[in-house]
Length: 349
Image 1 (tube, rainbow, N blue to C red):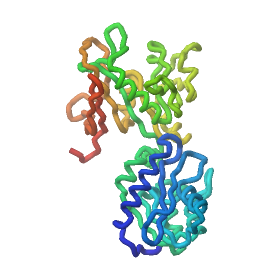
Image 2: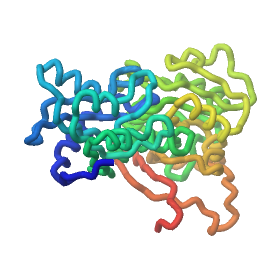
Image 3: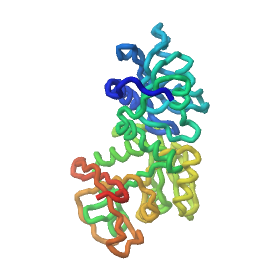
Image 4: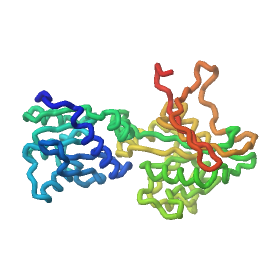
């Protein structure tokens, strides 16, 4: 690979712009959010691009196309891209080869592509004599596509677990009623979160008791453009008149309780993220198996008492076995408290 002769620092501003462009693309779907800018010899941006979703041109191709539309040549330019250019042919051609053919002289990227098929673009470019600079704004780049990176490396979707509870940890009153523990602002956030995942998973008991639609709706009541695939887990049958059967994102019933097998199957289908929303039994199963990547816990200002705890048995018999969490964000929405947490990594405090 050709050694870098430029300083990574001189491309930080351009990379921040590329990261900003990347957020224009969808957070859901099999492909990551990617942005790209093309720079001239004075490091001035002359073209921009981003990835708009599976089957559409990648960010580098959009940038090259926009450059051509402006009547400029890519010969000798620098491409600054948030993810290492791909080196494989999927629904579109390899970006690394497209950059080579266009005459790009230098490629700067933030995050290496861990995909067995898609990775290797940097090596291809370097072997061809292109100057390659890796790791510019790497932390920001990894944070942007952490769900996708996780799903590729772990061979399963990113799992967000959500539940709503009273301040004393109950998800329902003694008679099973649970509407509404939290207020409108919190529920609006939940709908937005649903729209930002590829699938939503609930247990059969939630369907039988609440008959939820589980759609992702705006505060005005309209459907978000993206609707997650709705999955129900459990041995009992989903009633023929259950509202979830008409889910606009699709409906599937998995008639067992093997959450690991389900995630493996979803990963094989390029489903990158799931939102687990439904019942203490299901939530506890994901937690007990160590399959939760982020928790969204919403708390309404009430006390309910009674048996309906948010979490059941996790196999914790002593404090040494406790599931330790790192609280990453606390938010006040109306009268509610919304807490975001992640499982602590080994060795963390």
